[in-house]
Image 1 (cartoon, helix red, strand yellow):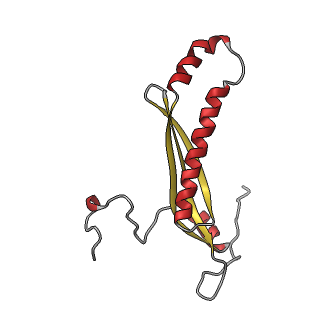
Image 2 (cartoon, helix red, strand yellow):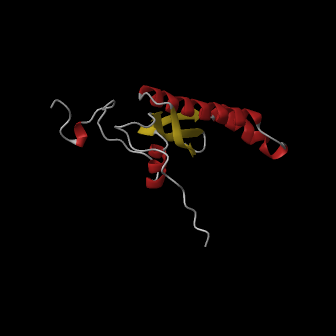
Image 3 (tube, helix red, strand yellow):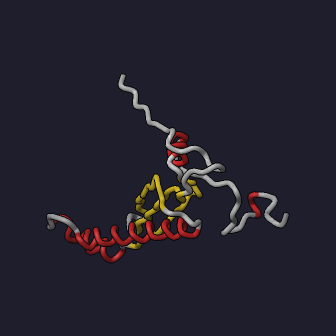
Length: 145
């Protein structure tokens, strides 16, 4: 075995057999029940500097009503980049899609930087077959009391 022997020896790009997911147990089971194979957790991240735009906007904020389009555009660009990077990781795993996606936005460095993180579970459709789990036996029960 040539791989790392301790967690501190792991380098970026390490690919083990196990993976993590942000799906609940019931969600995971329903995904498998519908013929999908969860492949792994995929993450896309970017940090955008809003320095000049933010400083300009602060100066006129009190005199302006309506959308701050430059600020909104930066947010759209940052979100799109984070999602694209998450999709790239899913493509690298051979996924057909990403489920359970969550997008988080945080502001850093005196609110001049915006960090956008997109996290989801990559899945591939494998259908049903003799060596696969049975499908279409799952159901969701919602208590009414």
